[in-house]
Length: 394
Image (cartoon, rainbow, N blue to C red; front, side, top):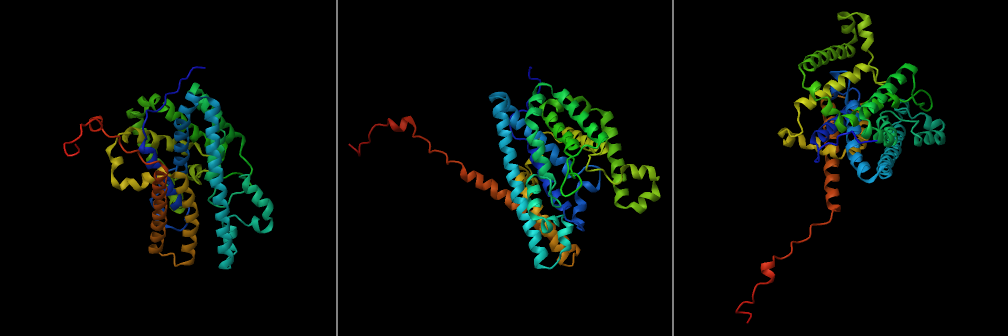
């Protein structure tokens, strides 16, 4: 089949790094309960949140990074490179998993607080450690806040044939993803979790945002250009974002929400169906993606502002920053539990965690540069090599 996808132009798109950095910071803040600072994140003002952004950007970057390789060197090479990335993600998850549960167990034993084991969903390790660890390696057992990375691993692991089809039939592939999304919601498809229940992020539905990111990168944005710049989308999008804000605020303050709107309307959007990626979440995110594409062009000079550099750096080292952020969210949660939990403590924990994540990103970036060979010294100019000897030398 002929190639119909359109590869993005060469050069790094700093918008992706910026928004991936925002997603990492927001995920860290959102994972700390009873923290007033997480009111700055988008989950409080609309249906979608940092997880939607993270999955979309993951699909976007995976497509243009590996699409060119697949086109130039064949499907096998592209698929093996994707598999190598999946292995890196899996190793990162296992390391984070072990450190995370070890930290939770140590804290529970050191401070004689068994409730924290139940709160972070690691009680099975006490009763049946071997089977629980085995299920953890199979991605079926996941402690609290360790749900995003297994989803990413599964989506990337199944991406090679999807990318092959996306390069040849991008619109058809996008429609197939949409059909799978609605079928999963209709028939209740999901993966089983251990010891009971299902995955918090249903891969059968969340794949829609991942594939949408790939489609958007490989020509979808150009195809949608007329829609993105239309006044109809502008007015409808603004109205829908305002509606999303009202409904989300109603969910945050349910007593007031029930007073100002009928129960059928309140119950239709609350609680927000994150597990199966409710259609209103998808629409909310798509509108935001279209607005960002319209109002934040790739060549926007603001991307070079110093204030955005820490976020961009965290986005460029996303995997390490994400793993550190998940662990620090547990540390921050525990610190607030052990302290007064005052406003000052919440601000300090939030700022300290983001500061550490940023330092990790800058260190890894610096370390990678040190691994590169130094540039060779320039060869002397030809005129210098052929210069006649001086009289002093004679």
